[in-house]
Every structure is written in C-alpha cells, then in structure tokens.
Amino acid sequence: MVSDSTKYYNAHPEKKAQKNRTQAKFNKRPSQVKNRVALNRINRNDPKSKVGDGKDVSHKKKGGYTLERQAANRARKGKA
Image 1 (tube, rainbow, N blue to C red):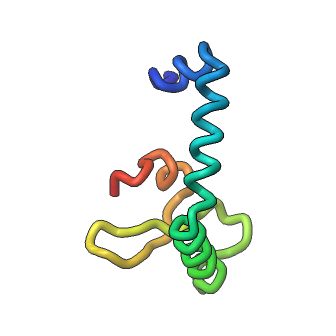
Image 2: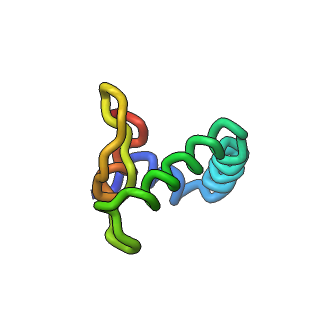
C-alpha cells in the first residue's frame, strides 16, 4: 500500500523536485551534518555492527543509541 504523500509526489513531479531541493538544503545544515557524522561514527565503531548488515544507529526515546533495521528506523521519520 502506497502512502498518500507518495501518491501526491508521483502525481506532481514539480512538487517532488521542490521537496528534494528543500531536503537537500536541510541535509547540508551544519547541525544535520554533525548528527549524521556522529551516527556514522557510532555505527562504524560498534562491535555488533558489520558492513552491509542492513542496520542503522537509532536514537532511543530516553537517550542513547541502538542498532535497528534500516527500514524500521527510516520509516519512523523521527517519531521515536
């Protein structure tokens, strides 16, 4: 089943391009780069993590980090 937003952006390619430009700007922010670098470092140095294991470092609700399937972590979109 496809989400409503996916249907919308598939039907409106100009809006999809605009969203992608906005997201690219957001991802370039120094605060976002810092967060991404920190999570990548944790993932790289975690002894339980292996290259290509399909896991991401995920924030826990009460702080800290855990390894989680990429699909589950990215589908939540920050609703930890």
